[in-house]
Length: 356
Length: 112
Image (cartoon, rainbow over all chains, first blue to last red; front, side):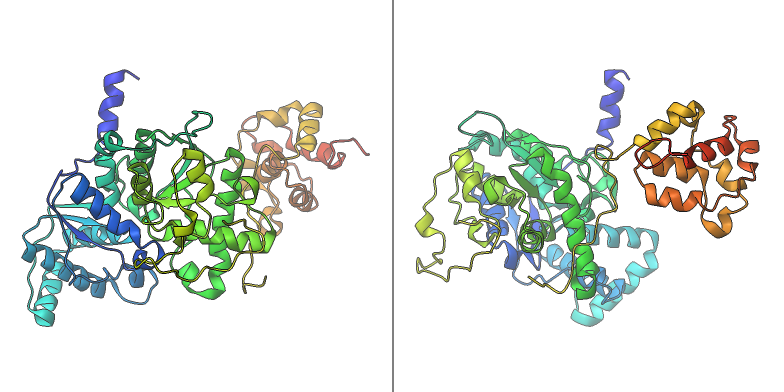
């Protein structure tokens, strides 16, 4: 194919992401799993890159988690989402950025449903007015927070203190990227690179010096799958999917996994402990696991933010071997210090998976 | 440690670890096996497939994926009527193929 033709086709897989003025909504579960990620998204975008990103303490869950667990109907989720849009409208913003992949999918799905069924949108507007006397404009643009970091990846690379290369050898780190299913599998044109060539995370990894590795189960679900995990009888199915991914990536010896979804880093991290307890197998080097990072944590690391401020002590898999490999200094004594510099409890160690 | 759930075995086929000796022996003895394009005409016309799960297409695919037990189960249901041979667009003598296959053990050795 001629070069221009390739460029034209690739252009269809891109999306124009506005540069500034965003209304930010957080995830309902990330605060518990990896609490520093959302904070450092705001620190990086607002304080370091000087963008206008507004958030309000009045926003709630988008209800996507309950919708995907089959516990509430879509109309209920729509009314909750309509309230979020009302908050955005009241704050004077038109661009909406979500921290959560499922929220992103949920917002896209609801807007698409309203486009197909305008009478439903009218009903939700009426329900919202009856419930809390609010009105809303639909956002002009919806992005996921990783879209913004992808857009700013060049600026972050310019300010980077460390690059994703092994200090001892100078070789780029081998990075597995895992994109949340609700990012581009539901609405391919809403994701950078579409469903076939999503490059939102691989673009960041390569811009910051890493090497993205391909493996057979690269686009497989992390295993969370909402109703698979939340119903305990199905939990083995969730674990089996994660196990399948690790078995598939193992021969390629990844140094780390980066993700853009709230559930994926949690399950790719914690299930390594469960797999090691069940089978005695670990996937990293020397008995350690493969660290699973969020893209904000990775951006924070390359920008030189202290690893313990980024919340790596909340990870099951030890991050220290990776920090040593890149050459990022850290103080082991500070690992389990709370915000007031007082020692918080040290967790118990697994029997098989090596931790620091 | 008992978590109350287990890891289920994966159904993924790792082609690097598949034992293809029986398939390779079949192709050596009946080279037309390699010309199969998997159209499924044989399976569509098979008299026993509806009640036994026999499918010549699946037999050849199973051999290439190292699923020997599944292949043997299907072969035992074949009645050798030969209708599959009549419909094959590639002209493969599928009846002969099945007879050859029955003579091979899982290591690809001719045993009868």
